[in-house]
Image 1 (cartoon, rainbow, N blue to C red):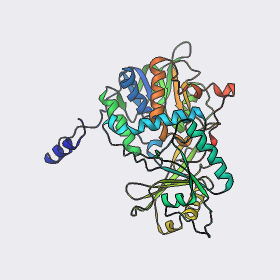
Image 2: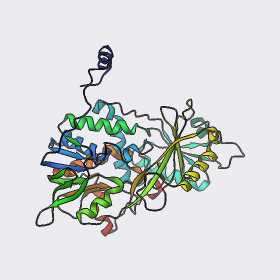
Image 3: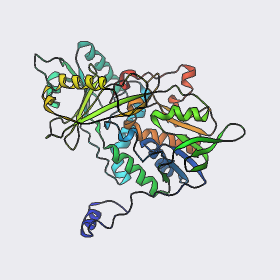
Image 4: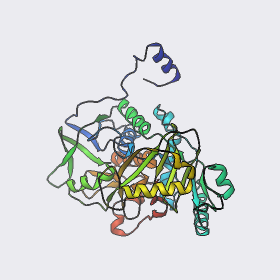
Length: 416
């Protein structure tokens, strides 16, 4: 069914009884051309682009829980491409350009709101660094602009810019095309579109091992619902990528951390942009429902617990109130954490693994949501053709042996 205003009217006249299921929930078949492990944004996007771009529709996405129930449903929905190195800038801006047309392409409203992303400078050193950052982005052809203290106040009037402010704001830089998208809608839109093209979406099907041939190559997966054979297998499991890699017989340079966030009770519109303060590690935006969405830095100890620590939560809230003292009257309604996959250079890994027949999309750390379209597009390309996409070529696993790192810690190390 095509979603449209006319379809909504017909649904209303039929007492909402004419809506079809958004996607199919079939039983797993014995074999597929491609099996993708992980039913989050990257896995679903890869399945969709395999079918759409390459005509590969004999595909299964296997998820141990429910679609979008991992990090895709546990993030703060920011999309942006203000990265420093050319390899990262090209990849993330490609993702942002895909986001800009994603709702129309998927016939599903992903609620993209390009309200802008404002990074605050609290010192002259910050301003100098941001000036270099903006110049570099403009050289890459990506929108960016330095803004004065007065312009910061115009974009975010709720900020404390008084002479007595605990954190002085000297200015900052802004990417106007950045903003937010609805996390659930992104996952559901890709799932619905992939299912319509013939992809099987299999939920509640945990992978427990891998099928291998005599040479050690992967030929399928062992699951809680039986073995499934595949020509190629891809892992798109974020913080649990290293767990699956160990099952397959190799080690990833990935450490998993909890990254937590929280929302306040809803209020009338007060913040019409995404604000991030590198000095505090805090970032804040306001959702369409009126909630203040607040995030911060990683819990700096390895963990698979989807809750985060009280110490980091306390630090994040203190930093938020230093920026926005008026928010002290708001009550925190919900708090959660996702498990992010951090590598040494804060850049992703997309491509083949040391095990023949097994491919991976991981290492996005705190930047996975904003990269979903590009991560899916490039993973689909290597699965369909056996060749790395040009955007993914710098992000191969072998760089940890060669030392050709893309150290995006400055742009990717802050939680966002």
